[in-house]
Image (cartoon, rainbow, N blue to C red):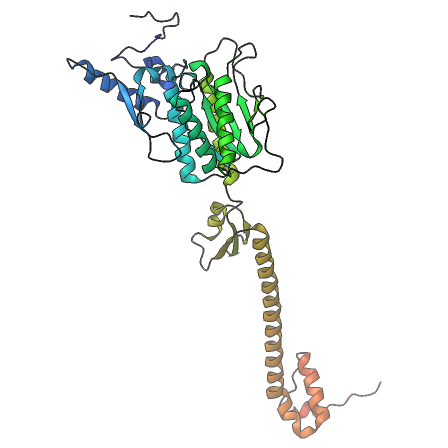
Length: 392
């Protein structure tokens, strides 16, 4: 048994024991606790058997041209010890990096963000890339076909494992013959990329011969071979890990996730809908549906509509306001005309009719009198008609 570290944390995973100590479980997030419980349960079952199997998760590679899915690459295994290393931030096995890369490419296949792809890193270990080996030939062919499938992409993410123990993320842009190395190790740690560089150069040469396209002035001619190759930027600026750290794979996973998330954000459409509330509690233009809903929910006679752009929504709102103003003016004028017509009718019936026998002058005088709310009596009083004003 390997003794624990001075802080009490185990150095390696012990079958039948939780991966995380009980006092650290509150720090676990997402699916970490369910995964730990699943491993603990499976190990407890295996320990009861006389001849238990090795505790691993089996991973079946999807039948898709983006991945290396020929035998024996179509199935790989994630040991429970690898999960322990993942939880405790130890050096990760390359199978975990491959699992994450395949997961991201499946997500890209579903959501279709533009100009990005994640290559399967199955062959990208130095032990698989020895000169003249079958696996090296297969690696060149796979990368060549992958670049042809994604020739519209300007960001191809490729995790590699130089010297079979380090981990680096390479960003390939075939249109510009550019390979950028996101090496998180300190500048004092020099890695040998000779085999990986050779495979990449052979792959882009085959890409060119198979009809791969380049941007104008995008082809790079290697000065040593006078052939098309990648321009390798080994010391590309990126996040660096502390000196002596062995967590290169965590930095690669971090960069992979960041690139894919950025591509998804860039692929999102602009603001989807702007809402115009024509009739509601507070009419106007709203950018969020929740705000629009507050104005129309349970509002009798509500009227609203969504538009794809703010310009169109504002134009519709202003047109509605102009029409509403014209309608108000029309209603006011109609009301005034109705009142005038009613007054004239009232005057003609109650004032003008008895004065017709007295001539046009009397009719006009009667109208003027009525307008000043003084109506002449239909039958003039004798006493009033016989009154005379005595001169002073």
